[in-house]
Image (tube, rainbow, N blue to C red; front, side, top):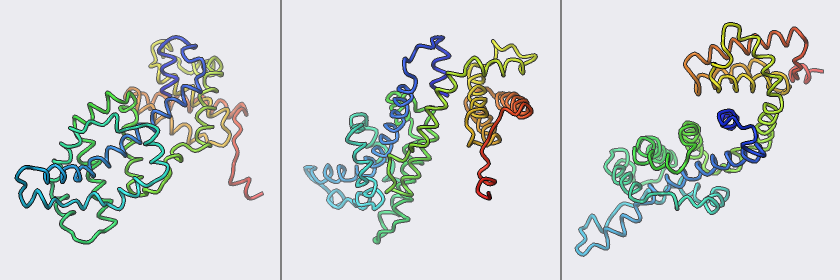
Length: 299
């Protein structure tokens, strides 16, 4: 959707000689952002080691300086993430440490040490997997994400932050719960095949989908309709016609949600009405062919 919008906004269909290659670059950027966030989380948690060294090296260290509680550095979930082979390879490849601002890391760490959640965590002598998950969840969701400096720096580093932030939050939370998950499964072969096929199909069938959509606009001026709404409807029509394994209801609901999230407040209802109208017309014409797996499995 974002790539199609970029092409449409530029007015140059040749903006990207190979849209699929550009799509892969965009997806790589998403993977890089995820790795950056996982690395950022680990840097905040492990900053306690730097803090302990700095305090111990003071000219006249206090008792507290010499006895910093470094329990969080041994967090079981943190180390499962750090020892996850796929994440380690991604960190080596993307080098997120070159993007991280240590001053901001330190500020978030200091904020962490002042919280009751952290004090409760380090004062518990035993190590508990649930508690280890909870403290990482707290650091990421309650301290890192709301931090304005973090947001500003991440927006500067990643142009896709605004669009991907919500998804990234879900993914990082998922890794906290299942730290052994492979980062390579974020985009399966099946998902990649679907994404590039949908992109290419929407481009190839541009004129045909417009022919189906424009008559349904009636009192709407097609030139004044939000470009993103038009792109979403074209993508939706392509799914209805050329993706036989995706139920029509799923397609329409998905594009309603996308319109609500990324376009105007009225876009959800508008896209719903147009796609539903086209769907009924295509069904009546016998044009839509869908695979019914339930019936197929009974035969």
